[in-house]
Amino acid sequence: MSTTTAPTAPVLGAAGASEVALAPDVFAAEIKPHLVHETVRAELNAARAGTRGAKSRGLVSGGRSKPWRQKGTGRARAGTTRAPHWTGGGVAFPPGMRSFEVKVNRKARRAALRGALSSHAAGGTVALVDGARFERPSTKSAVALLEEWGAPRPTLVVATEDEEALVKSFRNLEKVLVTVPAELEVAAVVWARSLLVTQAALPLVLARAGAAAAEEAAP
Image: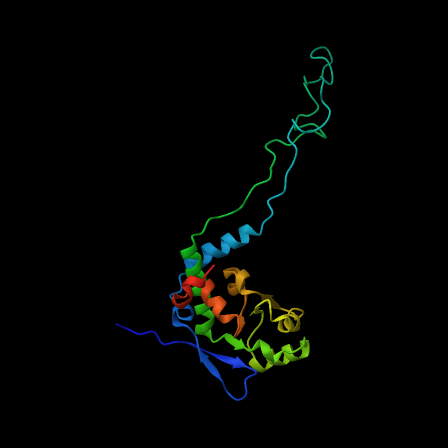
């Protein structure tokens, strides 16, 4: 039986060179492109409002009587000004409110998230950071941390809601998206070219991805 080597990630801002081992069942999982594509499509569709609409001939005002008599005028017969070919008339087959939701099973969604995270781990574009090092909001410190890391942007930062100082430090940076583990989506992980996770948020990310050690804590 073959064993999977646990990937590692650097801990930014740590004293000296520091790396930690990542859970192999999440960060060294099999990448299934079809599941990633299906999940990203479902997430993007869920963000669509679907509120566009137009009035049919039964909803527009006016046109309660014939605009002219049936015969003797030399014009084509007409029964109402609500017809689609009239100016101000209704729309033929108008669009209405609809839902673009695409169902994706929880097991497939978790597998897609594990695949997206594994892609970052394989490319060396995932790192950890201790949120406690940000005692107060400092955009300058956030920029210095990213420059020290040297990873390409856009960057996705995953932090807990309690790490307010870190969130405020990163949220105004260009090409940096900050999110919490409960709202982590596959589309955001795929969009980002680098991934920065706080040490406090890592267990929650593992739970959301359906890690074996955190299966009971998964939402």
